[in-house]
Structures are given as structure tokens and as C-alpha cells.
Length: 165
Image 1 (tube, helix red, strand yellow):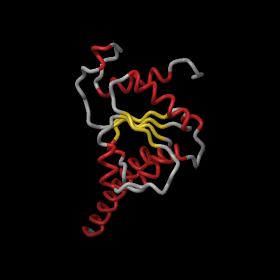
Image 2: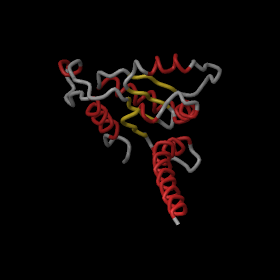
Image 3: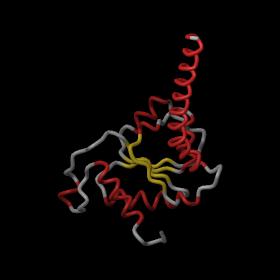
């Protein structure tokens, strides 16, 4: 979709629905909603300028707590417990793919933390792009685990057959 056709508005509607927040945007509805989940939303952006722009729009149109993670000073690395304490206070994590990938590989973030992932400009991801690596982490790990379990079961059945003959 081209710029200005409402992709961000659609993302906001998905986020609001995910958390059970009213889709109407008025003063009374902003504070009144029943949270449907404790999981988080991960909103990925290719550039810091898009991250800042779209996070501001989501913040203005929802009653959710947002945090932004993006590259920069790699010398700051909180402990696991401190990091988990920080993200547990927020509903939506807006980030660049590099930072999210780093926290996934370190074990600070897990795919179970997220119930909704929105990827801005995902059609621009290249083969070895961090955006693509994150997608593989979420999608392929699950299917690889299932394939490994299935092949283990098949190997066990074959071993039992060998023992019985």
C-alpha cells in the first residue's frame, strides 16, 4: 500500500482490538477497557525516524504504554532481570529489528512474550536482513521443533520395530 492509505490506522485498530480497547477514540473510551491479554505487541520499524513517527501516532490514539528500543550505544546492557522488569511495565514495544534480534539471541526476549507482531515495510526485507531473521525465529523455529519431534517419534517407532523382529 502506498503512503497515506491508512496502514498505521489499521495497525492501531489491530493493537486496540488485541488489548480489548474500544475502537472509538474519545475521552471516555481511552481509560475504560478490559485487558484481554498480558502478552505484548511488537512493532518493528526499518528506520528510527519511522519508529519515532509511528510510535507517536499509536501513543496518541491509544491508552497503552509504549517503549522504544533502537540502536545506538551498545555499551549499555542491562541485566536480564532489569530488562524484564522494564519491558513488563509496557504494552507495546516499538523497535528496530537489529535491537530486537540482539535481545532474542541473548534470551532477554522470547517469542512467547508477544501475541501480536506488526512489521512496518516488511516487503523491503532482504534475505539476511534482521527483519527476515526475526521472522525466521518466530516462524521457522516452531516448524523446526515440530519436524524434529515428528522425526524423533518416527525414529523411536523404527527402533521398536527393530527390537521386535
